[in-house]
Length: 311
Image 1 (tube, helix red, strand yellow):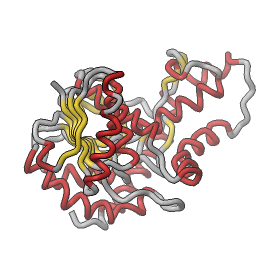
Image 2 (image 1 turned 135 degrees about the vertical axis):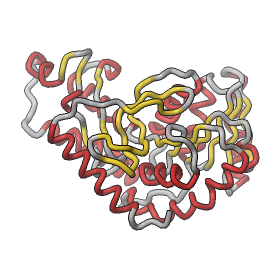
Image 3 (image 1 turned 90 degrees about the horizontal axis):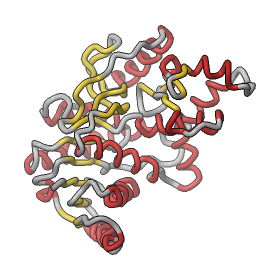
């Protein structure tokens, strides 16, 4: 038996519940939202398709229903509006988390807490601090989605199956994130080397254009349809699968740092081993000097925000 509780039945929460129901890895999914009718409606809508998929119990509940959950996925919070950066959300959502997390812990302090609400790096750090849970049991979805966007864009450009493109976006899930080009490869061939044998001619700004498209992807989608939720829901499903199946897979999730590249007391994304107990270890990457500098900049931006919070 595996149970996942999803806090927040908005676009991201409901779509995550749907993708998890389709995954076949979860036996129970509970949706919890201040708007109980919305959670009930989403649970019913998903449940009506259960005869066509593997058995799963999807229902709406209250905070007490997180009891027994293996993973608690937090998507609740104020939504990002057009023209608003993820960091603009920070004070509103920090206040929400300061009241919500203690209530969840009353009913379940054994689960893995996966934070998805934006700004995810700040709220992961906030949750870690106010929860008192051990390191590794609280982490954020981080740049799992951004890394997927990066791989997709490179696959389109190079005309290669995206599953054979290996690249990471690291740092903040937001405006200071960046591609770790020094470790990007296509089926084991470094990206620099692959470019020399590819035969296609790229413009000199190619790498910057790709990074800019990744950074601005959410803004573009929000401008077009008001919210992003499909791809992030797939990212949530992938992370939850890693936990429940104890995969020890490597994902760019956001965790509180303790000296990596000289950074501590903030949460940022780096490739990390994820399994049954959450984050087991953050990997030490052979980053270039320029990438280490960019990572430090990302950390400084996060630290400046954290200083303004009452946690």
